[in-house]
Image (cartoon, rainbow, N blue to C red; front, side, top):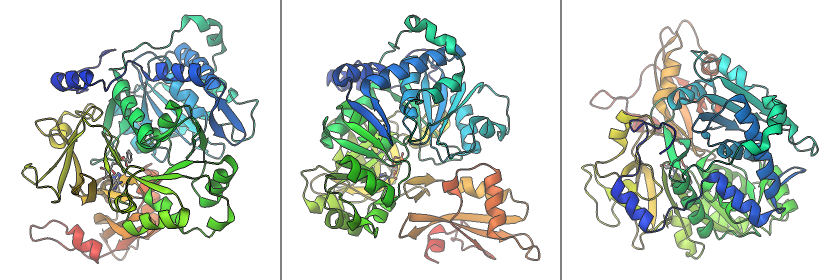
Length: 550
Ligand code: OOB
């Protein structure tokens, strides 16, 4: 482990299991930049990324990432440094990402929807030294604006940079957005001095965010080797090859979009990525037709939107062969509609940023693809379904899904106490998901044990939103729940009790209050009901289940 990673912050794979995964050949010796270097050598001028009129070949991606790495180095970012990265789905993202990897810096991926409150928490918790925000030309809030909203503005996040994408039109000016962001042209002069990071592939590559169970999302430390192993396995199970054209629709920083098979899976086989800047059927259908897209990954709520879109007959979608759907439970009716109305093979993906990813196989029967979430990627993934005492249940019985394996973390980063709750003594990660294994060992997810709201694949912790609503001076009490929603899977509902009914508060007051706190847009309740009291269980806890049914 390099660059001063402390054992109390990072929990490595236990020695014995690490030796076993090594022996089984799970982990390669490439880090992310060596991975890209190999791809550039293999695929050279082939187009890696398309965004509007911008085309980025494998070669160009590598050389621009190198250029950017020099700028990062010139401003003082060093190997081992954590840098919070937040980006729209634009091609500059790839240059910045591999630029960071080039110098051995470690990105901390922050969803684009996250606001100042989350960015501050994530930056603090990771000990990041920098924050890079990559915007579309339409986005107005820059990195400095976000930092200005921090509760403690002057902590160690000294490098703050905003890159505004050139948009879809200005091919010639493409690298300029990045060049101007670091304002240090001297860096170009010393190109030879900076070598690509040779950091061991077994070391920490980046931090992903957890779906979250407490206020700020927890940080998920992944190594180069464990991650790229899951990428290679995902690309295989999705049958990607260099002819594949992948449409990237979901947020680019999400683990699903990154690796399951995601953009790394596509790059790993020399395929071409096409970036959708908005997930609407109109925009995406026209990209599918224009670029003869062969695969796309969606969350169920988006799949639902596409399947029922009135635009469905208006475009030629015949190139589309496979649709991966994951991030939240896909209802069998919608799964069947994907087969029937889109005429594609559906591949269900049940995964988590902590590691474990399951796929249905493209050879599975329609029944399996519609009704199950498939099998784990690796033969060395262990999945135990256990009861409340932690004892494995019989096959077919519902229990808590726990797992360990060659690409599943052994602890959150800098979270000693949370780790006691999230991992068993023998190293299994407790997913919080409920489910069972069918007679063919396919996993079926049936629900969640934790009170997480899953809104269109975005995970929201009720207590975090509750705490913020409660800080409104006129709110006496609040309960936040997820209620079933046709379009979103679950929508967020807040039940609010006011101090004084004579002083009316309306939905907008609460929403404005939340926005001022800088929380992510997707965490703002879709519905707010003002009530006189909640329904309680016999032990005095708010009965969330009963509220959901009300
Ligand atoms: C993906 O990752 P996260 O970390 O945002 O969320 C993980 C959680 C799971 O524990 C589960 O509760 C839920 O999201 N989930 C599903 C699901 N896929 C994820 N629940 C039911 N059915 C599914 N197919 O969401 C993620 C990461 C990699 C690949 C795919 C999804």
